[in-house]
Structure formats: structure tokens, C-alpha cells
Image (spheres, one colour):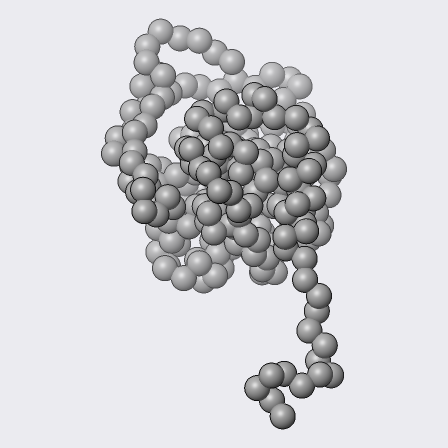
Length: 245
């Protein structure tokens, strides 16, 4: 944590009341963030799991360079501000990481491809083995070394503010991976569900207010409910389908 004189980073945007997935960014002001130079502690330089949150891609690359050894996982998040303004610099850090988080608009813009499956494939070509495309209320699409996984968002009857849901998703995702060390296909899928669960709590209130009151028991309960909602039995291939004699 560092405190300096000046205004903090801020951005403004508008969400559609008819389609909460549609967000229009009106303004982005880096302010003191424009001159921020990260300096990792010795403890952090030895971390096994590194999440490069949404900052200037040149700073993300600098943080990675400060690590004493290659972490077991290096994950990255970004946004259209950097995709539009620093694409070449972003390419360099995307090439160097294992995992990329982007929302569907960012993935389409970065890959210059409207189809999300093909967009993920193009991002793979840059370098990362795992591409995670956040889709708001429609859930998440993951391409892990070409293996696809799609999960819905947890259904809610009331959404107050979707701001920060994607950040919370990434935090829950990488947090579980770092806690378990499980980078298997099953571990990544489980982390995606926990990320979705955490994001579902964030949107229930403004800012981080809901997370401030959240309990471990509530997280486990919602995870179990998510599991119940998405379970189904396999199709018995020996039986005739309704449209087949």
C-alpha cells in the first residue's frame, strides 16, 4: 500500500437498465496511478501464485520481472483502455503469462474476432494456456489448453451494482487455486464456480459492502446451491430420442 498526494484512479460509466451486461465507459482518469511504480516486498517476490490485476501492461511486466523465480501460475487481467491504447505492450505481457481474464467485449476487441470460441483460440496463440472470458449474467467461458468449459452465473432476483463483479470473480478464482494448488482441469472448473459465487455476492450491494459482511458459511452454502442447480443426468444413448423411431 502506498499513499501519495493527488487524486486516485477513477473511471465513470453507464449500465443499461434493460441489459445490465451492456456497459459504456464514459471516462477513465489514471491520476496518481499514471506515475505508480510497484515495488514488491521480498515475501511477495517469492509468491507461488501471481495475479497481475488491471494496471498498465508495462507495469504488469515489471512486476513479473521482480519475481525471484517463476511462479507456479501467472494470471493477468486487463481492460479496453489498455487494449485500445497499449496493444503492443499488452501483447508482451499476455505472451508471458499462463492465464488471461477478459470480459467478452475485451476478448473480442483484443482478438479482433466476434466469435468467443475463436477469440479464445487467437488469444492462446499469443501465449497463455488458459483463457477465461467473463460473460456477466451469462456466466463464463474457459478455454484451458483448448478444452472448453462453460458455466452459468448464479441466478439472482435482485442486482444492485455489477461494478467489481469481474474483479471478485478473478479474486475468488485465483484465491482458490492458490489455496489448493490444484491446476488440473477439474481444479480450474471448480475455481470458476467459486469465482462466479463470489461475484454473485458483490452485485448484491454497492462497492465492497456485501463482501464486508460475507461469511464462510454463506459462501459454502451458495457454492452447494450452484452445484445443485447445474447437476443433470447423462443421456442414455440406448434409448430412442423423442424424434427418432
